Image (cartoon, helix red, strand yellow):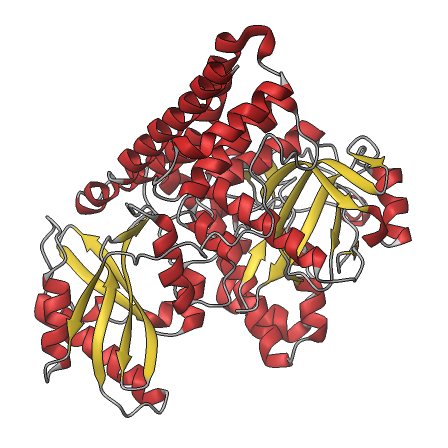
Length: 573
């Protein structure tokens, strides 16, 4: 058995090394995509890279089944394989990634419920950053008397084949933004140095320089957003607040492409910039989605061990498709697909699964929450409120099973918790509510620009983050803009048609009438007027047909992860 176990452990280690090499090869295309303005290529790379992991796991499982034959699910053999595995990966960068890959293999083979520590690596108490003793590769630029010269050195060291549009004006812009921010924060001390992570971060149409500025007794995050155009490249945003940087690294955006030798080192650095961001989300946004899932599971298990509150229904109206619950002391929500969907829902369970998979691979543009899919999760039954257990057994019996003192969940999604927009508008100040109403319109617009139509625009299907951003999180009616037919609302020709409770004209399944959107939104009169003033065009078929034309023509409609008021340089260059 020893030689077979060693051979299996070596095979898995080699399979992960091959996957990781391919992952980094796709990632390394990002600079060329940016320099050549190949945004469609960048989007294809994003999808290809996401799909690599499952493909690698499937291929490895198939190879092991051929190698082992009837022994493929021999638990004693796999205990030995696990025992040999650490020696195979000694000294490998980000060793936890390799262990997660091993666990993916055994979970796929055995259909593990909960965890099986004898054949996988699950230590919930493990801190993935605790053993990191080295630092991410950075560049350090010291202020020798002129902030302008410091910024000039930093930007001059960026190695792009694209030319700068106006290098001097770009330097002036960056210096001006840093000075204005520090002055606005009451910081009178001068910048001592700027330290940046050496690899550049790429996300769709932007490149990002990520680092921090420090002075005597102070430190600020620093993120420079670089835009490339046919006329040249320039910095079009300078972000120096934790909130701005947190949004860039948010859970509602597509993953970064940045070629890191050791991802854990970068996470350690980033946590100093955005300390409230969970480690799980940082691993995920850097493209290591499976490791992000592992860390989220660990975060949940650690939290359960040190808390005593109960799982309860999540705030907001009960959904027709999902049962949603949360732990009040934990900032996530758990979502289960119901066994049956009452009218008027006509979607099937597989339709819902397909929608979530589609979102996972799509450009989320800062408006779609990253829902992580978990299977065969075990949670203590005693932590569930009785009324929640009653609904779970009544509405999700095909998915939830009692097992001793636990509940086993065959399938669920876990995502960050937000305040449902309809509740937010009732409880927020008038000014905050007005901002949310306008951002709701912007969310619909942003989704459209990435070829997404939410389908069900009711306020309860949108949430508000701690940054005040409105995010869509109910995917069962979601579809692509290009799959819809946006129509003008026919005018009734007689009183009888006017008084009917249902449509008196033919409506196909993919027909959408934008003029009717406002009828379903519980806005105040003032909010409705403000919404129409700013976003009135999205209530017209012309807007949506225009978006369809641009999408079909391959035009990239940008949705930026920073506020429009931060973009000031473009008009001056």
